[in-house]
Image (cartoon, rainbow, N blue to C red):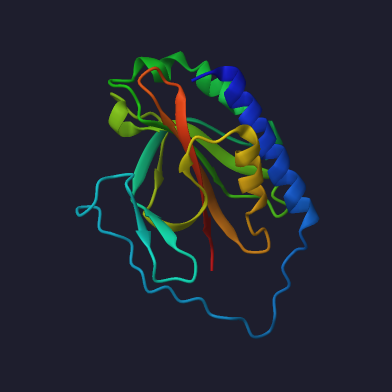
Length: 199
């Protein structure tokens, strides 16, 4: 993976996220709130491969089900605008690269625990533990339904930044996941962006 392009993409995404969050009004809680009910159930871990994605069409907007996934890499609680520093730490992590047993298929960027103003979150950049001999400080993403903000294909940095602007910051956000699919030479072939909203 090329460090410079990763840093540029991540910087644009983080700045866009911060800018859009500041421009959107904060949600107002009404006395009587609408109840959200979902009829889909998360697939069982035995019936689906880890990290696989399936689509559900029983909602107004199609939801993507990402099965349980365990990743290991570099984690930090930091301003989302400084995520390029975490990319540098991830790329410089020689102990992680020594634990690779096979070519990873993707790099996952997992954002969660956002601050009230979305300026800070806990961010993990890592590989699926399937590609590693051991998983130090692994993070488990339980099976969940996501809205796809960016379909899986080759995107430029502007596409990814625009996709972050489509997050509805008025809703509670549980997590955001960027998936960057890799070639055999670790170049990014395609990317997608997923968001899971809370109730």
